[in-house]
Length: 93
Image (cartoon, rainbow, N blue to C red; front, side):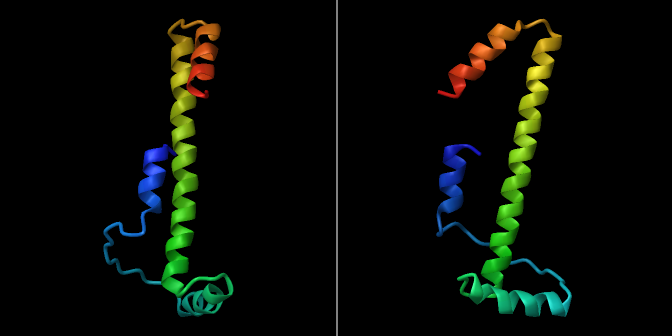
């Protein structure tokens, strides 16, 4: 995830939107029990944390997948491996 996006995600004053989510009652009760044990103020905060964690993992996978697809495409188009490796080295420093 890009640094700017990460900084925005860490901003606690981001606008919020209310959503309705239907969940089994026993799951909600487990969330209510678990939240304070994990240091959350309430179960909704825990749900947001779970969703955020899963979303970040999925976004990272998708970003990596797109990145790998780009490298494969460059190779198919005849871009030399050394050029690709040099570019990768450059962006990682």
